[in-house]
Length: 210
Image (cartoon, rainbow, N blue to C red; front, side, top):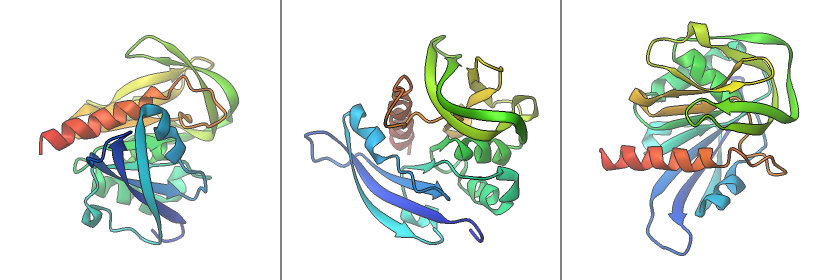
């Protein structure tokens, strides 16, 4: 991925206290040094990881899922990253967070746009449209996915209650989910911790169906 620093955590997910391997997760960090490993721990999951650097041949690693993380820029400025995402969609369960969410939106055929002020801080109310619950979230982004540009079958799962912008997506037909905000935020809020358990269940179903 030329021009965009990437790292990966290729790890094993196992239930706490058990030895049986459940999943191999590939974590692609898009220009960010923030890791998501600790966020799995409240979900009764142990992640053993090894850090790799450089261009990734994702499918050759044969992970059970891919996590696209946050990044510092306009997703439209990195079309090669979008192409990488496109190559993976439909082949593996995918979870996108922040810039990862925006790249998924573009890879699915949608558009992103620059917000007037962006969302920054740790007190943003988001409605989970599936459960009806309101989650308080940490956010730090200047771009958003335009839900009107998304193709049929892609579902808006979360909405920012401050301005009605898209805060989450799902495409069940291809085992895709994403959030615009940060469920992994270590200081909190932790209202969205269950998103990681949801992704684990997504990988579990995909693994059972292979």
